[in-house]
Amino acid sequence: MKIISFDGRVGANGVEVKTTKTGISYATFSVANNSFTNGNEETEWFDVTSFDPNFIEKRAKNITKGTYVIIN
Image (cartoon, rainbow, N blue to C red; front, side, top):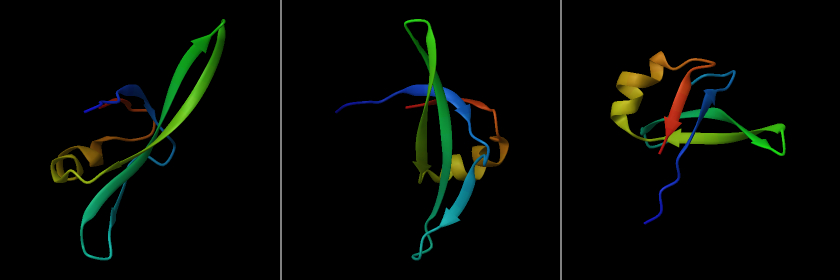
């Protein structure tokens, strides 16, 4: 198994909770990750989707634009 981890700040739209056609809730948001290469700052955006009911019910409402997050 491989694990991907990154950190950054949540983008302008914050967390959006949506529902599939079959009634399953999920959350989507973007995370900006800044890195430095040869003294130049580069920003890479990651689109995140979570189907975890615990995240959706307890944490999604508290994550807004600019919130620092760590994604595993």
